[in-house]
Image (cartoon, rainbow, N blue to C red):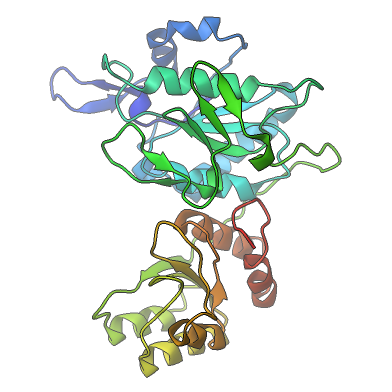
Length: 336
């Protein structure tokens, strides 16, 4: 168990009334049922727990290093993480942990563990059970990076946070959930990436953060877009468009984007809609983007598209290779 921080490990400061992180040891003390969960659990901590708002690619690298260093010693890994950026971390790890053959389950809670109605205990204990689960042949049931939250196990790079207040904080809108938890845990094996012992687990650490997310809206200003597209500090753009991948037929917008592509920037088109997929050939307003060299993000979440582009650029792929791989499912992140 890798404890990074987040609401699941928060206690209230009696003097200030604010929520503050406490230690991994105190977390275990607040959930004594861990000793009865049927798995031998060892815990490591980030040292100073962080709020998930402070999560960054360097922290992702620390998580990857911990998993890589301990890969042969454990059957699975549970990552305790704040909810705000959990889907970003899960998406990033799905690419950084290439050919992972063991469960990596991220979980957390909407309420601190000390609160009587907290969802922390159920989320944590079930995540441990899933991380330890094996099939009849002794293989891990879920050998991939996932989020477990509020009775549902979701593929990490298909998940997004959808609520700041509901206990059902996450959803996998464009891909079925991998398991449901009730009186038993029901695994939907047809949706789980199969275990393949022939593939070699390979950790990666290089993520290029020179990416921005640009969302369309009525009245988007030309100067702002042109400034971003001409910036040498930006290497890629996640372009959140309308509907099935549509953008206004403003000559300046398409020309600006096309020029950015010619100058080496990769622009990935994903929909602002929670469900559905980009189909740029469907309407003229989308076809113009396709002709400008913009790449389809298909049914990707914004978190997965961002993490994937960071990963591909960090690995040093050429623009042509990045464009090809963005149209390929490399970790189950898109339907193509």
